[in-house]
Figure 1: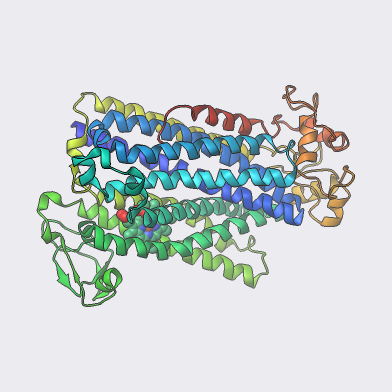
Figure 2: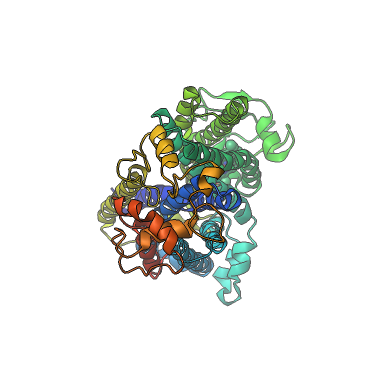
Length: 555
Ligand code: HEM
């Protein structure tokens, strides 16, 4: 295998994995904030339990995303030194700002995870906002660097008079940036929300249909629906921009081999670059001209306008584009089905097995579309690494041993994926701290039966996440004078953090003023098999992620 192929394969594999981790890290904080916000408004403990569970998932995806992003930054220097030398003045500031966003996220995620029992409920919720904002900002900054590779604004100045090159203007005055940033950030929300919805739909199929899971599904579908509805709108804006700015990419996306007035939209099909035919495609006359330029008779430049060695891989770009759009359409349909059944059944969706199966099947669609979208963007840009300026082949390292790094980094990403799955399964199967059933209560914590959860919830005054779901029952659980009569984060955590309460975190100081609630919670905390409280597994992960942030990294 030659170095160029090995290097491209390595980037494709690394980015393919990293995108999944990063999209979850962007999407999960939003769900976490939604859940905690609803808890603060409604004082219903099921939202608190969700916020805590999703906070842990956020911490895990953040940590894994940090490691995988750091590895990627090394790969840029290792594999593409000529690109780094040329593009450094433009992309460097974007990566630096991404680093700042990352540090901000690390700091506030630490505050969020460790602040459950130390901050007031509203202050705690507020610490989640910078987590969500900066995770999105990280992605937006990285996309700014990528958008410059697609549309290298002021590259002439950079090459001829580098001292006059203004990176801020080149990055953020680039019209490609907002279009790509909005579409790709929404993609993260859509992908995360559909994955989360699939998890709860899967739980419903296995009999876990308690109110907490129903709320979780509803929240995920709310976020997923908004994002999925916006994907075609922002995608259309992307396509229009590509049509005027990167006509060769558009031609590859649409398998438009010949320049043509009134070009058709080709649905499906397998383009053959040798013959210029697109067998199995369904053509809608004039539609591509209209979508791209708003006129059914407009001329769409074909691949015949450029020499053959400047063509991207047409079959891959076209098929990836079709996959993205089909996945996007299916997501919208799945969302419409969900809300239709929710409306018909007044919210009791989890008994609808066909819908639950459909949502499980729709779970990976967002990730599939996300990967396909990036394939369109990146493969459609070839043979350029910086469009019109530097070819990918010119940027690759002359050093030997790329195949070795390909194997090493692939193993690293496989290991990270296995770690992510293992940690998420632990959250899925283990009891959630603060909601663990007292011995013999039969609650399902994170994974037991819904009936048991409901039963133990009402049988266990003082329980946190699985505490009585009716307001009146919940009010009976309070042990804190002058505070709302529902256990809040502070009271719940207090029980878990009391020295000697079975948390295994004796280093944690007792929480002032939380004695009563703590006492009420102590037996359950003692029974919690997974010991650590809020700063337990997820907290330590967050801290580790923050530690990694000190590494000069790209993402
Ligand atoms: C449903 C209609 C959709 C249309 C018309 C559409 C259109 C496009 C276009 C034209 C591009 C290429 C932009 C470029 O190279 O500059 C693109 C890229 C991309 N798409 Fe889509 N898309 C759609 C749905 C989706 C969905 C559902 C997702 C994921 C959930 C998604 C994720 C992405 C990503 C991650 C990229 C690469 C980043 C970017 O260029 O913005 N797209 N999309």
